[in-house]
Image (cartoon, helix red, strand yellow):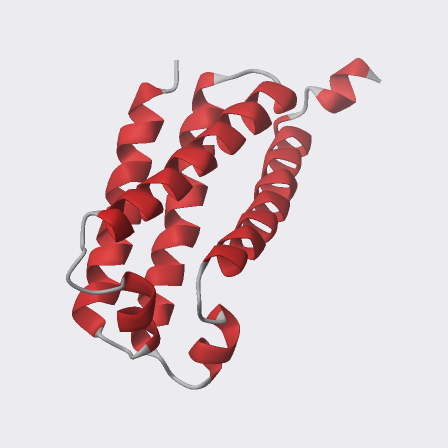
Length: 135
C-alpha cells in the first residue's frame, strides 16, 4: 500500500486537489475582505474585478507551486501555502494603505482597469517573492 501513496500520479492528484480546495477557501476569504462581490461583478463584465481576482488565483497557485517543489509532505505544503496566502492578504492591505488618495476596492468595483491591473501585478509579483522565500 505504501507504493500506492508514493505514486507520482497519486501525489500529483493530492497536491492538485488540496490546492484547488485552498484556492476556493482563500477566494472566499478575499471575498469577505473586499467591498464588492467578486463573482457578481465578473458576471456583470467588470474586467477590473476579473483581473484582480485572476491575480489572486495566480498568486495563490504560484505560492503552492513553490511549496510543492520544496516539500515532501502534503501537510508541510499546506502549511507553507497557508502562510503564503496570509502574506498575499497582508500585501493587499498594504496596497490599500499605500494609496490614501483613493480606495482600491471602490476603484476596482467601478471597473478602473488601471487599478485592477496593478492589483493583478501586485498579487503575481508578491507570489514570486513569497515562493522564493520558501525553504
